[in-house]
Length: 401
Image (cartoon, rainbow, N blue to C red):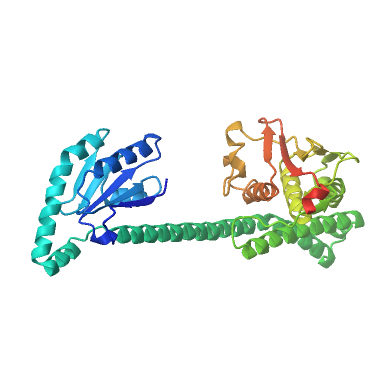
């Protein structure tokens, strides 16, 4: 059903010249079409010489018009001219119209009689009464649609700004820990190099120096990743993630990331176990974005897995269309009531409010995975660890054609 439809009598030349102007408000109920047909048949009883216009408005598509005419129910039939305005509403609308139609016809006759005696005065009176003509209503609809579009654009822009502000604020917060770790390592090395105390210098043996340098290097890489995220967020024009998918060897990528993070596993003496089948099919994904997701999930696993704990990375050909990546830990777990919310923007577990983690990172992971038409979820029990899973589409040559 069109949001605005106009019926005019045969003798009418211009809609705005019709002396009897009616607006019928309906909704999308199946009975609406039958009601419209009945109203039209009833209006055929009018003398053709008077002329009329019937505008049909779907309130579900033009709710602002329902508000403008102060409707309380549908269907409703409103006589907007000649004045005074009158509204008929209810299930017995046709019966009401049949009852009022003779009186409306008399009001039309009176209006036409006055117009014949003084055409200019009648025209001025019509203008002053602000008759809702077809043209005026159509313009109002267009204006309302434009206002609605601008409101949506404004909301989208505010959401984009809010997203960037939240992202950069959280990443800036997360930068503090690795910066502190790097600073402490450098200060220790500097202190050992500057002191004349032989006992202190002896403690700073080559093995400890190598460990401090390795730790500083690992934390510097973490800082670099965070800065990359900040710059990426600054470049994004929306909260949506842009991806550049291609054929990707997921097993090789996972193995490379695990090898790169070995220093971080060693700091807490954590054991990393992998299950990466060599026959896993290639996926169709953006390498940089997928790497971002895996590193983020592994960073969280390292952070929440206790010393001497176990972290697992596994890939699985889940269906003919999807490959699944799973990253598991034996940390404190996530309460059941929060397992969906941890992927929301700005959500943090109450226990983590005073420290970094489970902040914007998981929300970014969700955006990246959804941009690949995949899913991301977590299985977890309190004090029994967490298992994060996400899926990516299997690469097929047909995807490139």
